Image (cartoon, rainbow, N blue to C red; front, side, top):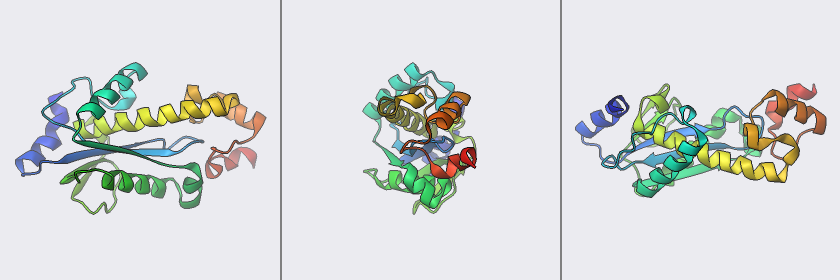
Length: 199
């Protein structure tokens, strides 16, 4: 657990106080939005189970989502939908979501720890590869992004039940691809991601 505070501790020693973590969810799926979450956790209130969201069960993620939102100094989740992804590509859509998430925070952070993505956020920042497994703040943001996006995809599953979005959240599983070929795309499919299936 202490390893997750390496970057935060270094920044605190340098005089930074409002340290935010940021991560995204949903860069790879064939359908739905990309989500970016930014979070300034209260580092005096530590939840020991916080980790890379991919390493946690859905039940544990949901509980930690509530813990993080209840205690954070500030947090934000921003979605960029499939139409914009098709228009500007997934990397630019991710950067747009992240930029919006940062500047939705009140107060504005002093410093930003970001999972891998490099971008001029208008703030001092550090991009950390596999940051969601190396930084507590990024791990907290990864949980917010993952849970918020999964909940949205569950709602889309009710709207478009034939694709099974509740099972795969839009990722390109064999079942999803089979249903996509059977029924064709629905409005939330990313045209730029699925064009090869209909070539």
